[in-house]
Length: 260
Ligand SMILES: Cc1cc2nc3c(=O)[nH]c(=O)nc-3n(C[C@H](O)[C@H](O)[C@H](O)COP(=O)(O)O)c2cc1C
Image 1 (tube, rainbow, N blue to C red):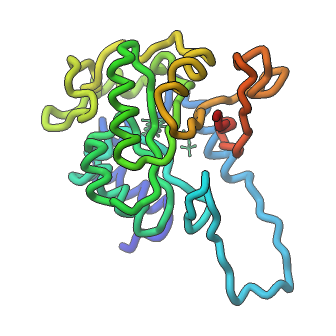
Image 2: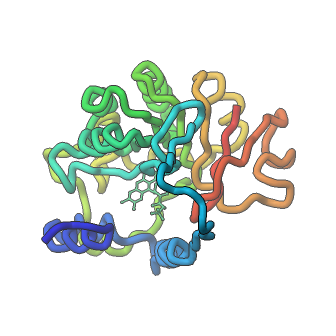
Image 3: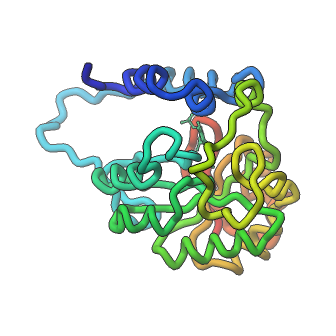
């Protein structure tokens, strides 16, 4: 049967993937409230139709941080693509390149950043960063991503600790031995085959301003801010040195902000 919409792909994946892999991709944390809310939020979106306009020629191209993309949609960072397909993130990057869409490669990719770039050298790409307690590890990642032509860093700030993912616990989910998170392979594995307890829960605005901004010339996009606070995302109470922070777009699960 042809796969013609996302639900078709979802049903196909459920039928074909091992149970633990499917449940890793499909489930969220605890009661999955946020996951369910996100799905409902997508369904609530309505487009305002404008009738009797000449739409015989349409053009959805736009620019995102100065790079032209074919439409204002990107591929969010997600981990462990090789669980679903042997080529993993290389295939995702090729697809994004083919459509000229921005692909945000996850720190938890099962292909290395070098492999991703070799597979899709022309594709618009950003790199998603988790900050590790071992800052040298994160610094190495940032430098590699910058050298490989990633055009922005997407700093995920909503995972100081991993959520309680019940199905992963029940399934004793782990990466199979032939897969590993290639950028982190110098560390010992934990349940997911990625370093245990290495995400730095102390990260705050000062780390962004005094550490990350000094480390890279790339724009930094902060991913996972779900509440603007009383004075806005860039309010003085939150961001030292009053850096200019631009609210860049609404995600269903929060706001993205760019700091430079
Ligand atoms: C299977 C899976 C893996 C994910 N891995 C990452 C990741 O490695 N880094 C990250 O910043 N976000 C990760 N996310 C979060 C997504 O980027 C995104 O923020 C989230 O899924 C909400 O968007 P959605 O409602 O469109 O799914 C992951 C999400 C899923 C479902």
